[in-house]
Image 1 (cartoon, rainbow, N blue to C red):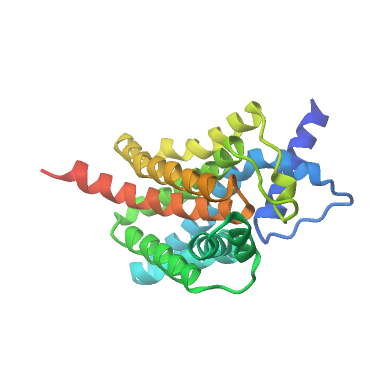
Image 2 (spheres, rainbow, N blue to C red):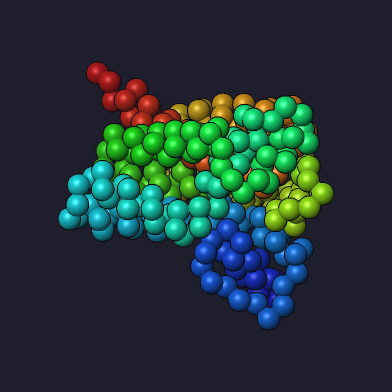
Length: 256
């Protein structure tokens, strides 16, 4: 029992090491552990969202709402090293500028950002900021935590339903399909923050599902599966879809 718990703690720390900039050091590291750590990807989302929520809550005491939100977004970007934002820019560049599969993948690995990536990243960050700006202030911390967790679950669902298409890459250790047990664990952590939101906000899952289905179909048809950049893009796109969905639910169910 103790050994099993130690293994889970090791997998969790592996997820922290890979998905954040929090310094974690191991005396020995096996790439296979990274695949097993996928189950805790949404839990990392809870932690990142909680940091963002804390920064927002503290900043909102003294600063205008808009500045507090910007500081919150900056905190989560610093905490993850813009890991997912970088994936979004690369994926949009590749899918927007490439024709065939090989060209799309070649553009994705280019360290330079193109016009498609810059515009896509700008629009997603701006939409995220605007959607949160119009939220009820008291709702923002819970929304942030739920959005970060749920969007990372969406990335895990891509891994469960599709195949990794690159021979090599920094996400190659993640390429093994999660087991059903790992998926259940990830689903639990991805959805549990929703319990702290009013039931009406379940409607926010609708735009998330639409975006997930659309982008999953897009990468399947264009490159036959996913890359690490595609996972980052899925996380960002479904996160902003959730915030827009929460805002729409607030408007819809508050109407007289």
